[in-house]
Every structure is written in C-alpha cells, then in structure tokens.
Length: 168
Image 1: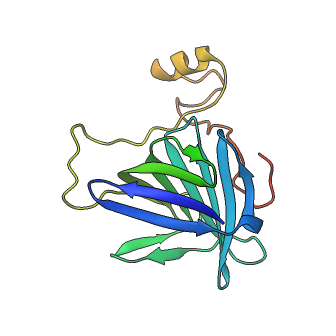
Image 2: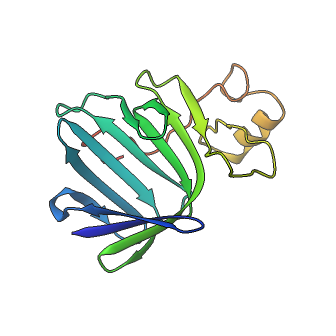
Image 3: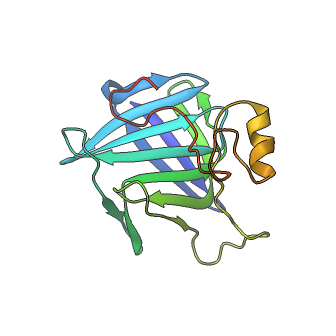
C-alpha cells in the first residue's frame, strides 16, 4: 500500500491509500496510480518537478466520465490541483495543496477554477495556455504572434498523455 498524503493548510491532512497493484510508477520524479471506485477509475499523476497534480476519471473501458465531489463542486473529468512538487519517502508521497484547482469537463473544452471561500489571493488569477517548444516561440507569444501561424497562445502544448495505458 502506498500512502498519498495531501496537506491542505492550515490543519487538514488527507490520506489516500493506493493499493500497490494500481501503482504504475513510483520514484522521485513521478507517482502514477490507478484506483477503481465502483464503475469509475481514477488515474492519478503527481510530479517531483512540477507544481501540480492531475486526476482523470474514466469508466472501466477507459472512456472519460464526469464525477462530482462534495461541497457543490461542479462535475469534472480532469482535475488539476495546484500543489507543491511531490516528495517521496519510502512508501509515502507527500504534497501541499495550494488551494487552487482547475476542473475540466468531459468535453475537454469547458473548464473553471475552484478556490474555496475564505482563501485569499494576492493577485488576480489567470489561466495561461502554454505551448511547448523552443524559447523563441515563447517570445513570439509574448509579442502577440505565433511562430506556427495563428494567434498567440492558439497552439496547445504537448505534455505527457493522460490517456489510460499511455506511457506519455
């Protein structure tokens, strides 16, 4: 059993036990696990060098499904938790949830941010789409143009695949 600790400051520590057969990767760079809850499968991705974790929900055949959470959270298929990079110690992984989530619906286009009431932000939050590639592409986007044609920011980035069974 792998213990996934998720600390929500100031005093909420959540533990998600992950059965060892569902752990697809566990090292200092990434933690990838799949857990079945009835007819829903949760695909969990956490990284040692990125400030986020991702959960994707599918049916038993691997098709995306929307789920709901308590506390009036809208339905979602993908949940990106903004958090500290994972820290691994033996059979445990730990991260601090920074109280900002990006929730994406099944269609992959409808999204929203979630920040609990009472959590203050110092600057206005904004969602930035970032394309992969060479540094010059980033400069081109900041200048309002894209090296690949089309408006700046119109080319989605290529990252690790979140499809079940993919090695990314």
